Image 1 (cartoon, one colour):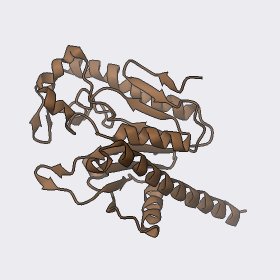
Image 2 (cartoon, rainbow, N blue to C red; image 1 turned 45 degrees about the vertical axis):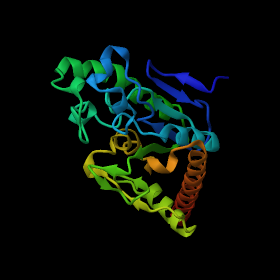
Image 3 (cartoon, helix red, strand yellow; image 1 turned 180 degrees about the horizontal axis):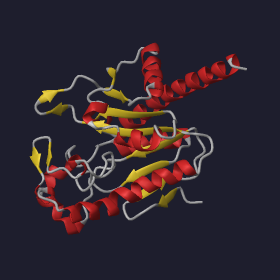
Image 4 (cartoon, rainbow, N blue to C red; image 1 turned 90 degrees about the vertical axis):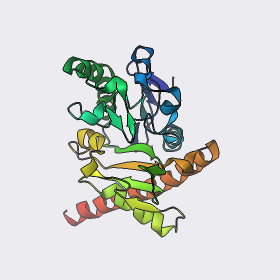
Length: 261
């Protein structure tokens, strides 16, 4: 049985039949821009930078998928065409400016242009996540995997791993407790280098909060996952923290249910 399922022209589900306790998502897996968009008017070298994708995130997510036996929903088009971690009504879904870069191909988009991109890139991705969740009866924990640039607007970021949450902090809190308990060498912070106020938790709000399923958004500084060895090691570390958080959550639920019986 294939370990990849096409869910749209640019969307695929890796390990679609995984039965682990998680559903993984990588919204910014690729810097690919379809030819008809003519690189959005950007030079080729700009499209290798963090504004076009999350370098290293897909490799980490794939290794986590393997270790956790978890399905992984992947968007294979650049976030500059459509950022699948943003809702259609937000300008940042199809940004005219990203950090210090102007995006000529996203300037002055018409409503029709935005609707076409939403239909072609966002809706198949959203539907693939929904289908995976609908097919499960065990309420999997939703985990999104991202990376971020070490230097943003000229300023160095000290945080190395961010554990982001919206109104549900159960998994993020459990993961940071696990990280600190093991004496991690990484600088790990909650809702850093950004958080819900920055509009980055759309996937969690769209898919996890309405279903009341545990969830977390993981951000990794991309210089820490620049090669295969580092990517595998990071995936191993994150899976350990995740499983610890998941176990603590399950034990807490059992105790709550037991006290109410």
